[in-house]
Image (cartoon, rainbow, N blue to C red):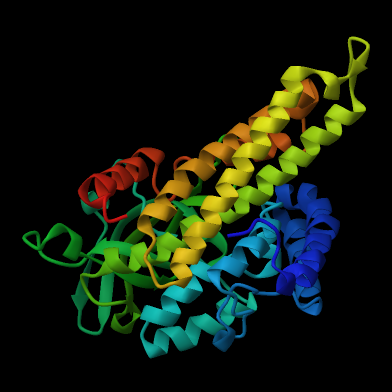
Length: 389
C-alpha cells in the first residue's frame, strides 16, 4: 500500500485538481444558492469537464466511462470531494445507480436509463428511509407494492430522498411479499418514473439549515411497469446492499478531499494570522490541531485504500467498508471542527467554506447507516470469525 498517487494517475489527477480548484470551487457560492443560475452554472461545468476529458471517470468503460478500479478511483474521488459539487460537475454522482441498473435491471429498463445516467442527461434518486420508521432496521419499512397485471402498484411515503425533484426516476425499496415471508426476503426494489401519476413531491427537507436537495415523497397507488423490478423479486436487500457498499466507500473517498481542503485552509490561516506578538503557527495548541488532523487523514486514507483493494479483489469488504464509514465520518467532523476553531469567528461566516462543510460533515454520521449500526455489525463479525481475519 502507498499514499502517493501512482505514476499512471499523476497527469490525470493533476488536471483534475486544477479543474476542481479552478472551476468548481469558485462556483460554490452560486451553486449553494440554487435556482436557474445554479443550474446554468452546473451545465457549463459539466460541459467543461467533458471537453477536458474528465467526465464519468468512475463509470465502467463499456458504458462510456473511465473504467477505473476502486483503488485508482480513491485518488480521483478524493480530489472530486474537495467540493460538495465535484461529483455533479464531473459526472460521477450517478455512479451507484448506474452500476445497480447495469447489473440488475431488465434489458428494457437498463436501455432506457443507463445511457442517460452516464451522459449526465438525467439524474436518479433512491428511496429507502421512511418517516416514523427506524430505518436502521429496514425490515420495518412500510411502503408496499402489489403486482396488478403488467404493473406494480406502489403505495407509501419516503423521506430524505436526495435529488428527487430533478430525478428521472426513484428506485423504491418496498414490501412485495406476504407477511409470513422471511424479513430479508420480503422486500424488492422497483423503479418508479418521476412523472408517474400519483407520485407526489411532498416537501423539501432543509438539513441543519441547508436546502440540500433532500425531499419527502409519497406514492399514491403509483403504477409502474412490471419490468421495472430491479433484481429478483424479494431480493431487494441484497441489491440495495450491493449498491450501498460501494456508496459508503465513495463517501469515505470524498471526505478525504474535504478534510484535506480544511487542513489546507487551517495551515494557511495559521501562517497569516498573528496573536499575542507572534504567528498563530507558533502556538503549541494550534500545532496540535495540525498534527491531529494530518494523522487522522492519513490513517483514513490508508483504510480507504485497503477497502478499495479488497473490493478490487472480489471481496464484499463489509468489515473494511463499515469501519471506514465510521472512522471517516468522525475524521471529517474532527478536522473541519479544528479548522473552524483556528479561524475563530470568521469560520462561522460564509467568508470561508467551513461553515457549510461543518454542517455537511455532521450528516456523515447518519446517512447510509448511522455509526451505531456499523459499529455493531463490525463487532459482531469480528467476534464471530475474527481469528480467520
